[in-house]
Length: 328
Length: 269
Image 1 (tube, rainbow over the protein chains, first blue to last red):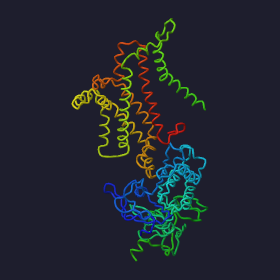
Image 2 (cartoon, rainbow over the protein chains, first blue to last red):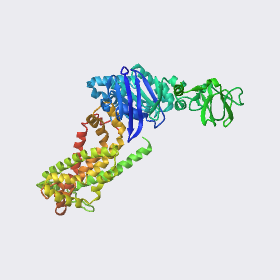
Image 3 (cartoon, chains in turn brown, red):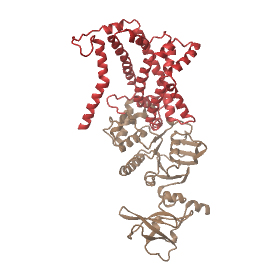
Image 4 (cartoon, rainbow over the protein chains, first blue to last red):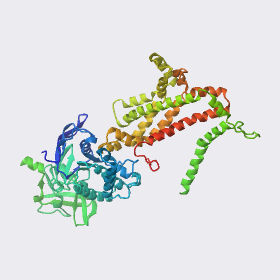
């Protein structure tokens, strides 16, 4: 177990006897990026704050590189946290901001400034060293914030929805760019988000978090195609959840205006919305019997509020991993 | 510059001139011109007699130094208490917080004289009456509530995020305090220092009660002047009185500029 770079074992956190998360365990190898995705209020930010040392775990141990850091204060942990907002120090220049954490690493001023300059170049802000934070745009500020956290060479970098205050286009650019930067520098990172696309794009692994538990951890593709339970299927996948045990992958669903014959699974639906993505037409269909929305790609032309049949071949019905384990 | 901002600038300087600069200029003139007034046909007569009379007052320099010393100590104690209490009130939630907040404001609600009379008895018992320490302590009563409130809002405007960010970057408590908290609190600290010093400087009654005539501050010799001296002398005294907080403020500003990460010509908070 201790061979992993990061080991979180049986950790719990409660506030005033109310459990935020319980018996949480996971491991990460050096250079891995784990995305934690979950709805608001699922406790993922609290987990991140506990890992950063801003809150303490109620129980459990947290080991980084064979060193138990559970009892260490935030400023003594080899962990850095990038917050949702850039939180740059307004009275310091960009260079001073980036070099700030290095003051406590026993480095000489010249070296601190050299390191800061290197990072500023890496985040593509050369020429802004002497600028003040208010002179930068939101995206640039967040890049400085990232550079500042990377400057102290943390063993573990935590990112708490760092792109949520940016506009969609910039957010997309930043995702690709940050992931590349983390990979280039082999930085072990945990990335928290409520956006499943962002989680998939950023993480080598994805942990779907709900009710203070990881509902499932795995590679994004695996979690997407083989959800462990109905919550994961609903939150992370685009599947049609038939019941608490089974689901139908969205790519196996097809739409028709007339009721198809020789197909076992047919539901009546109403077309609610039409989207055009990457050259495909997607219809958002509400299926009354299952009380669910499902978004299906189709070449037939539909109007809003038009009644439609959603069907799937019986072979395409799959069982959730947890249910398989229980039954098997 | 567009028309609107130009107009606003003119308005700003007009108001500043009228309410802040003219009174001071008037005071300075008054202290050096003997026959000041409207409707006189005589030639204006300049004289330093007012200032000479003022400096002939034997206790002036001593009283000024005592006032400065007491004021500086009161400001220092205010900042120490205000920073701690303000931070606690801004960042922590605990049972009875609102009760404590209103308790902190009580000295402003209960008449100062009543407090001073009560405390005087206690101070006589413990031997603090007639001493400058006693005067410093009684000056805390009308000042502490202001500094707690001002620094509390200062901390609230920084927010916990900024300080936690500094913490996760690996800095210890003291470094955080000097490199992030104090520089960001500068606007609140400036107002606190100025206000507290002026309040302390102008205390007459409570200084007289607790100091018992032994502790002679500037206010103690200023008030008797009101009756006896001529208006030129009084204007000179008032100018002298007003110079003190300005000098104190400037030296505080010099001290604050020693903090790390000061870019006096560029910082915008």
